[in-house]
Image (cartoon, rainbow, N blue to C red):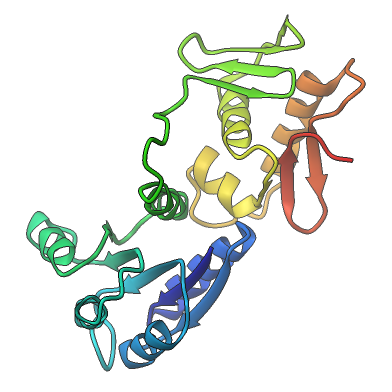
Length: 227
């Protein structure tokens, strides 16, 4: 997706921009509502991520002007005002989704992906069985099999593999794994990810001619087949 991020908090904007770029998206970032409105009106975006309280022009006023002009680009509003009244106000002003601060990047990413899916009628519901090549995970039974053979995983390894399987054939960054699997919203500067990925790789790839868990240098990890 090409995403316009309008956020005046430099730390939050940098965090979100970095995570979105690591997830493969193209991001244009601006720090005030006036510039955000100009960008949204003059360039094409697949989604907008708007802070509610912005200098120059607040996020809801920006969104209202876009909607009045016929612009239906999916928009996710971010705000420290997270009670029901404010969320309802944001949705009524034209937001497609509303996320209260502080938030998890993984949740923000999932909500943006949800905005995309809403445009595709008949999309399937959540899967209870995940499959990548000959690797199969049953989320209800909490079991994993590779080529029909059971794979014994610890709870954290199961969560790690589930996240990788849900993002099969995509590079998953350290930021995404830290938030989704360890619930860290910062980099602890440890090798915890490397250790768990190494153990998981031994369990699912050992004894098989085709490895499935790959390290993508400088980017993260990928679960799937690679040439």
